Length: 490
Ligand code: FAD
Image (cartoon, rainbow, N blue to C red; front, side, top):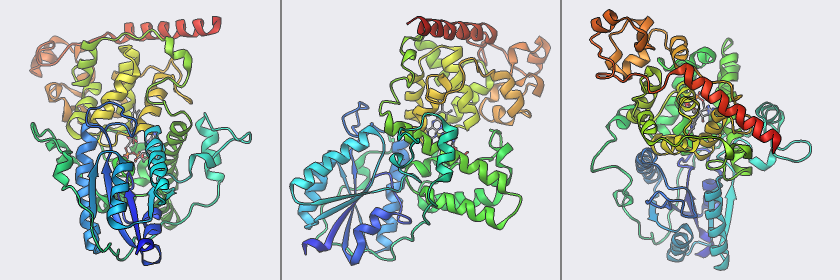
């Protein structure tokens, strides 16, 4: 019986389609024991394995595991749920079922890799083979390198190398049935993983905004390619419309593989003229995702340490009150506040607004980018160690291929440009909603009678700006100039 049972260890590949590792487990009609181990320490510390999940991600995971279990049952199988140390749990499941092989889709963060190594070492000692497969990325990080064999630090050459690589394989179909073992091992029930918030249940906004799971992901992809990809080059900058794919949490949890997304978009491009620019711009973002993972793989502490070491000496100001004002959407800048409230309510924020709020925290308030990274990690349904860390460092100017330090987003002009009719701000900051469009993004500049007419008492119904834009801009520029001067003389 021994060679007839394999374990597939589900991690961030919560899908049955295009899952090479799962197919390898089932190869030759082998019985498959599908297992998910909740490894992440609940206490929020980095425990040696994968980074402890944030609250919004835990909510997503609960839903996604429930749906995956249902899909496995439809194939005659089950999902075994465990928590704790992955090596211990998998060894136990192997013993209970007689499995001699474990398959997995490899991860790229330091914690995920560490846990793979521990599983490999532990199971090898018991004569159990561990087989790792790609699938989370279009190209594994080691396979994209400069002529000298080094990792890329700049996006454009990485992008070119990516496009010039071997043709990307087609996605694989889901298995049509999965045989189970003679004896199923013990499993926790989903509620025992304690992933969903109960007291209080703060997830109402997430439930209203999202449908986790592979089927919803596929629908979302198809709908985006049908209705929005053609106008993506302009639509992607508009937070007031559904101009982007909203696939990020699905991609993070592997409910959809990047190969499925890539080839579905290419098929649209081949079949419908006029969508080429949209598809190209969309696929470019998918390659930004690859780039972020490439950076995290080669620089494992990307989420905590500045990529450019001179930024260790930056003159940050740790101000708990300002950080709290930013977190709860009370800065007095309507676009920033709308973004932070969208995040709190729905677990997601539009990319344009992510850039504005991140720039505001780091440059207007001079709060260290790591504080923003941590808040996003806890509140985003798509919280992703690679994309989040690389993006925060990009905004802060400390990253590999970062925005220049003098690019300080003006939240007022960004609002006027990308939310001209004010629909986005009005959705999330109703206090200022009755102001006419021309005053919506800068209420403090509105004449008294306009404020009165809109029923808005600044400093009471809605805060005055926590910092003055012009002063903050000058302060940030001189902090960056000091850093540059210090680095030159060092
Ligand atoms: P689309 O525009 O439809 O893009 C398609 C896919 O490409 C996305 O789903 C995502 O997987 C990828 N992608 C898009 N933009 C980027 C980018 N700039 N970098 C890397 N990949 C990208 N994205 C996350 O997935 N998780 C995060 O934790 C995260 N944190 C961020 C923090 C900051 C400060 C900033 C500025 C950006 C962050 N992003 C993060 C990147 C980006 O904002 C989101 O991927 C995007 O908004 C998701 O929406 P979408 O799926 O509709 O994107």
